[in-house]
Picture 1: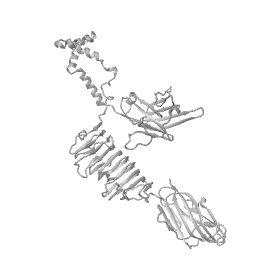
Picture 2 (picture 1 turned 60 degrees about the vertical axis):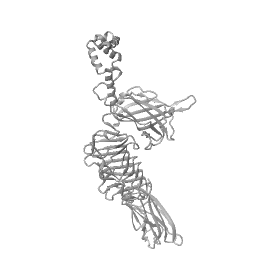
Picture 3 (picture 1 turned 135 degrees about the horizontal axis):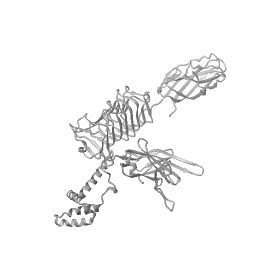
Picture 4 (picture 1 turned 30 degrees about the vertical axis):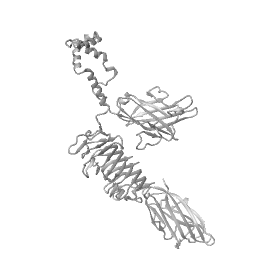
Amino acid sequence: MADIIPGVPTPSDPSCSLSYCARVTAQVDCIQYITQGSTRCVDIQFFGTDGNPLNLDNYTLIQVSLFNELEYPVANYYYPGVPTGQCSGFLIEILQDTDTSGNITDEGLLRICISSDISRRFVGTLYAEVRLIQQTTSNTDITGIPCIAVAKIIESKIEGATCPIITPSNITPAPNIIGFIGATGATGTQGNIGATGFTGATGSGATGATGTQGNIGATGATGSGATGATGLTGATGAGTTPNDIIYVNQSSDFPTPVGGVITLDAGKTYIVTTDVDLTGDRLVAGGIVNLLGLSSETSFLTSTGLAGGVPLLSSQYTIVLESISFKDVDTCIDIDGTLRTVALDWENINFINIPNVGVIDTADNFIYETGAFLGAQGLRFTGTVGTIGIANSLFVGLGSAGSIIEIDSNTNVTRRFRIIYSAIVAFGSTVGVDVDVSATIGDERYILDTVNFSGGATYLTGVQSDDNKSLFVSCVGIDNTAVNGQLYMQNNAAVTSILATDTFYKVAGTTTPSTDNEKFSHTNNRLTCDAPIARKYLIQCTLSFSGGNNNVYEFGFYDSQLAGIRVPSRTKSTANSGGRAENVVFFCVVNMSSGDYLEVHVANTSTTSDVTVDQMNFVITEINR
């Protein structure tokens, strides 16, 4: 288990499976691929929040429950024993061991074994739920891990065949085969071959009694009976790779091209194992297909001589791409989802030296993870797309005119367009991300979260950070979305009239808005929220005023939602004997939605003497989520 290292795998690591809970991390030694009807064991190791392996000696009970993609129960495993009653199961093997000196090896490591009876009943991914129980005299502590992928069962053609599956009980023992050959020798005419007949005598009595069966043996000898058995073994070998999985080591392993078009058969999985050149041909999906590689670092597809503007890969169906690189063509993809629902889940996909990655016209979702554009650009979305989700990926353009990613004016994003934890390098004439202002995207559904822009070119065109469609957070190289408002006045001479004591009046004067306001609009002594999503804000005001000598004035924020003064903001200040007070500060926290507004109001609690607020700075800032 030396390969199991705490932490999230990087694209160059094995595709190991991890699951987290608040206190425990579970990690599989890499998802096992199991042919239907065969057996395989899976090792799982547990780690604490400190990153160190978990000592399983501290747990009195352990249960692992397997279920398939439909959440159908498959098998239960228990330690230290299988419970009696209605539930049946298998014993967990604890691989952790402590020697006589107290040294622990394989700490936190256990093993479950999947029998042929289990693998025979299902095809697809198996998941595990784990429960670790610590029992003491005073307490029972249960830790649960809800879901971790542990194995993938691949369909077996032998399991579905009409011929019997080979087992020890249905193989004819070798001595009987020798006996039949001996009987054939007894027919004579074979001269010295009679020695073989002597061997047949070893079969003795009962074998001879089979009579005519001996002639059948002669036929077997002609076909080389032993060779026939070898043929059966060959069929078994073919069964380990289902007919719907095709390994592509060269272009001829794909279906035969017709007019330069290679039509991928519906329901098939094509696994590219090396650098494959289609030499001018192109791929068209004939239905839902999977196009995979062993690794995006070793599996490549190109087509030398393919004309400019002609896509290397076209599909009108859902297509899964994983662990493969496309390179050295003018145009790579053309996805048309206008005829039926299309879902695009692409992982570990690289586009290398491609000036026009291609067009995705209408899709239910496009999910792109841990991929890279390396000297590639021109991925354009149009039509109706539910979710465009991009994560943990690198985009490096060519430096030529055009955008790395484009959302054109005809695009309707019904859920969200999101890029997270990624890097975009735009240099020369290349634009990083272009979202047309006419594209339809919901409020704050254009999301850039922790995206690093570099290269020195134009990083964003079209929709910007202050648009209601945008929500840019923790990005580098661009302005992040901010929701804030500010107004101020200096040397104001306008008098606020006080007509009655203990009655609030809006502070009079001409205010100026800050040039850095975002998603707040301004009129005199009023800031109105224009942000479409409700948020909490910190409201602050500092002011100075002149009024009646020794009069007590009270200030506060008028909130349109209340049609009154926010009570937490109410603050009193006493004018000195000259009627002057400075540096009066008050603030509060307010939840605001689009259309809500705030103003600064004042009351005189002593007399009806008027007041002049000559200096005022009023600021609203979003409280970070």
